[in-house]
Length: 405
Image 1 (cartoon, rainbow, N blue to C red):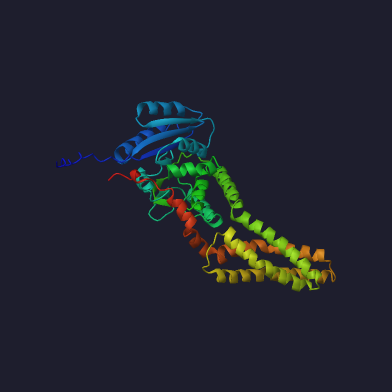
Image 2 (cartoon, rainbow, N blue to C red; image 1 turned 120 degrees about the vertical axis):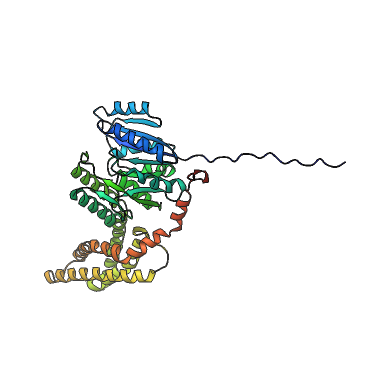
């Protein structure tokens, strides 16, 4: 008895991938005059020009005029518009609340005045939806941007970003452009560590992303300054500089200072030991500095400036030795002055003078290590750190979250 022929299974329709969703947050404070016009314009643009599912979230942070009523009316009239109310002011606070509650694949925000040309929105979010990048920012300071604004704001913006690049080693060009997007999973990972709730929120978020090894995509934008901007330039600048100082102190400078404290303690003990066995002050100083200099350079190489691997290891230590020569010159000169003033100083006084001279050399040492010894290799090492690369790869979006053709 022959077996019955196998019949082919009926073809199943392919499973359509889920459409990625983008949440566009618009933080507002006392914007009753322009809110309706801006949201209607944004709604039309998204309806006609964005090939993803989307939602507009108006984040009202403690408005004192009719902004909440206007926002609720817009949410009732327009599909895909929602409102979040916060009892306290702060752009960062508004974004934290709206982004933190979102389950979208990509969360974005833009200023309510729509100063940035909306045609840059798709280039902003597409690399995040595809998984190519993790954070995307509009930039007014890159080649290809077209910006219309006064000389004062232009100078402040460029100066602020130069400060970030010099002090925090920022590798993005424009921290404060009100046109940014983040992958949803990345935002949920970064937000708990962002402390600022005001205008510095953007900078802190970007620095956290950079330090995590995440990929920051920049989009040159066309941008026209809003003459009715409510930003208090002086207060915002002061708050931003306070934020820069906070980030600086908890990172490389703090590590450098901790290493310096340990190095100085070891140096002091070695100096006293060498003096106790009969060596002269100059000889004891030179030997104690030499013995701690190698360890100091290696600790700063690894911990302060995050340089790993053996590439240029010897050259960097030789360059560090030149920095040691500078410290030796300062401390030897200080000893000479002391001996001229007091021919037979106590060892405690010798040590106090040497530590004070070494402290004066600390700032010069940090600048030399940062801008000369480890400047070029630090960036290369960070970009090729396998731990950072794996942390980025673990955040890729699933294949289903690809942009539609």
